[in-house]
Length: 119
Image 1 (cartoon, rainbow, N blue to C red):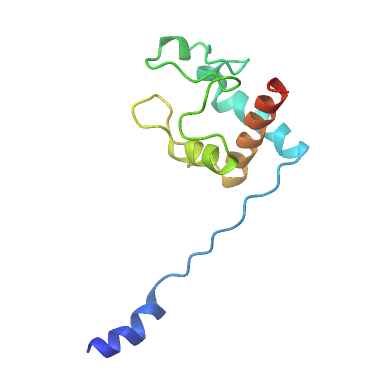
Image 2 (image 1 turned 90 degrees about the horizontal axis):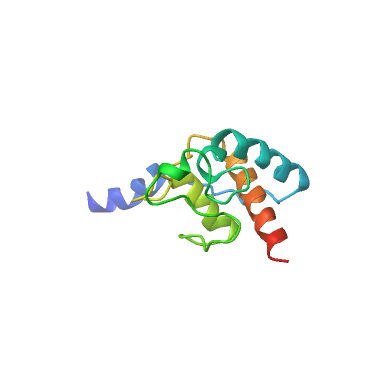
């Protein structure tokens, strides 16, 4: 029986394909700006400084996305994970319901603003 399981179980396991993230482009940054204005601006604010109308009432306050150290990392992959999963113990909800392309666009927009500020 064990021999049969060793033969058939691997064939029954799902094959998981992990796609590489799309490249950051001016178009993805522009799309990210639109998405930010819909989903993020109320907490993080127009200037991405954590001073949005809802953000002022939150404890802990939202991050200043331009100058604060990001809690779970500042690489594209780490920021994508934060946006997708949210941050426990904060008001940062998971946005995994957004299409993958939109989450990457948000990452590109946020990182483009961080880079521009830190030049």
